[in-house]
Image (cartoon, rainbow, N blue to C red; front, side, top):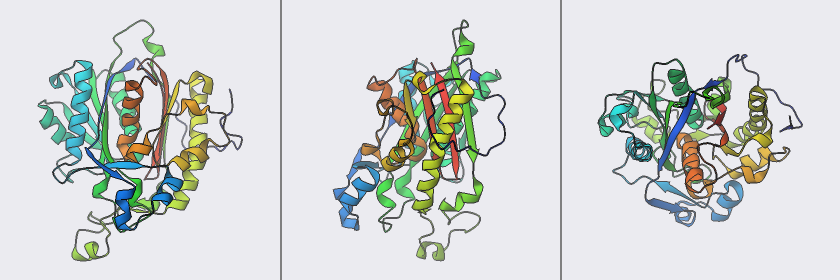
Length: 349
């Protein structure tokens, strides 16, 4: 196998014996981003430096929800677009999973609201693994289909990050945007060869001891909403960027390497790599010492910024729409972020 990193860092996680989840297929994709475009120049009024944003992140613009939109609205529109492409009615769904760290409410779940908006009775729940949330949700959905308990599952990654980032934080505020992406996961209708299609390998991990590096401290059970929380601006996301950067740069190549090993594949066997769109410098630094062809790494963060759980499904939908790949391609998806969490899988359509 062609090495993806000369340093050979291992991810210290429990042995995951069965990493294949075959016999499942992505039947369609969909996405939605708010119409409000916020350019770097728009942020200068908040004291942000346009040149710094581009040099340090690669982001040119991002989308923000208007006041009347919430995460469930983004998720619903992405999910509806996905179902329309698949030619599937919402009533055919067995389950809806919404990956998000910015739910409409503590309860009901964002997925329950989406279920109501779609007009169906599918089981619905949220999953919070922040920027790794879509990969976690995809693998969770695949388990339900693999065991035979579900046939059709709508998996949505959606976040309204503009609602939890601090306009007074000049370094963090420019990084994030709002969007949603969705996939319809189904049992492979083709019996012949089904065991060679689906998720060929997956890896997930959590580094809870570093969770404090990205957090929203206030307004939950540890620090309930209060005037002091508002005064200290603890309802907003806090991020210690430098150690997060170092962790991500070290983690991405190692996770890619391990996932390829588990699938007995080489990097040449992958058609397109879909990394969480956090920061262009993170992606470039992570790939600096690898042999991954850059033309296999599709990006769109220039236009959307970091959309957390929406990042990978939004990227996938655009890659399909732009003929960068098809749903029959071999794809490697890798998410990483708050928790700290990471998740990777190789999907063969």
